[in-house]
Image 1 (cartoon, rainbow, N blue to C red):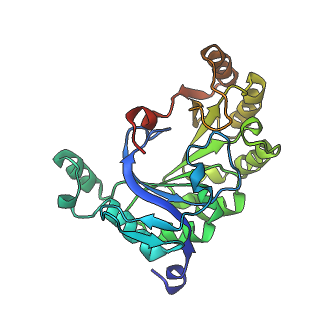
Image 2: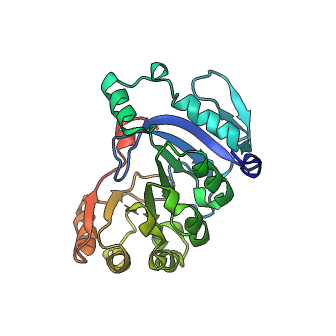
Amino acid sequence: MSRSSSMVVAPVAEVFRSWQGEGLLLGRRMVFLRLAGCTVGCRYCDTAWAFKAPARVAVPGQRGAQLANPLTLAQVLDLIEAADPADPADTNDTTDERDERQARGERTPLALTGGEPLEQPDFCEALLEALPDRPVMLETAGLHLPALQRIAARCRWIACDIKLPSATGLPDTLARHEEVLASGVLDRSETFFKLVADGDTTPQELAGVADLLARFAPRCPVFLQPVTPLGGSPPLPRERLDPLVDALLRRGLDVRVVPQVHKVLRVR
């Protein structure tokens, strides 16, 4: 770790180990690093509490232990290690899971999420440089092109959430998504897309998204996620689901309908 990277800090919301409940890596055990802060502010967000950094962050596996925000890179690396120790004897993995992971020569994947991680580009870049043996999935709105250009190639997977104007209240999100897609920066990793649909989502809105994805990322999986109703986000009626899927399928996209499985499992 260089001296310059060791000086980088970031507001952290939480670090923990659980199972991925969304998208391409659904069901995989992962370590989650949630950075605090997000200026998009989707009304359906289930971690809106992380829009602002908490004063302190819990240390995994150490009851009552906390660290004060913001955290240094070294502190975050220690939290990741505490959540997923390198010593197999310190984990709850089965023997087969440990053997498979060791055979691949890599650690449990890290989900770098938020908030919006790309609002902390210096920290994300330093973190990825410090984790050569741990594959990383970046979960992002995909609206921050300069930050993506710095770190996309270092991520094995990118989970790009397409932000619909109806859910964010931001009229320019699709134009910003087009800029990112047209740049080709998402081609540097294994990218998949997530679309959260609620009661206000229309087939016409999704047709515009489908046009973008068909032009720039036609082979990437697209996960249509019926909203878990939160805040001001109305539920998606069952009869509205098929027309939304059809709007994507008409452009030949690889569409899968998957709800938030971690909510069903009642885990974070």
